[in-house]
Image (cartoon, rainbow, N blue to C red; front, side, top):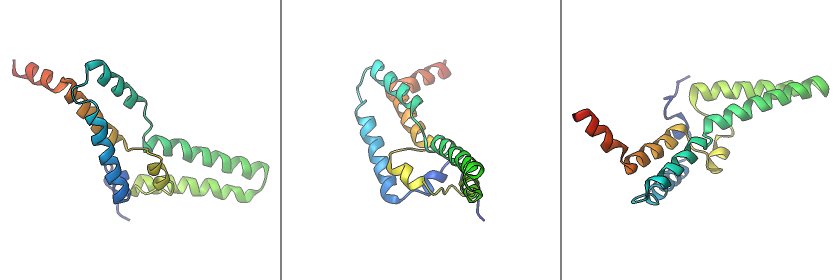
Length: 140
């Protein structure tokens, strides 16, 4: 079993077509803010702070399925415990290899990786002028 690169495991398990769509969306998002005022960029940065990434979606969906499987196993039929076992094993697989059964669905729904969100955040900060302020402080 090969361990995946932690920082790119979602992207490595995303189809090239969807990867291209996310890259195009990033360029489109950034082009809207070229020349924008500080307030508009600040507002977009706040939106990015609230955006759910893939990991958060998995961290919410998987325990929900585990809990549902346990509840159904206790109150309906013991065979439902298999749902909990499958969900737990898929989380382990995702943490080791980056693949997850619902990853393609989450990506099609537009969920990005934390790295993709951070890429937009950093580019917006450059557009806002944060990088220039940093250079001035470090030179003097």
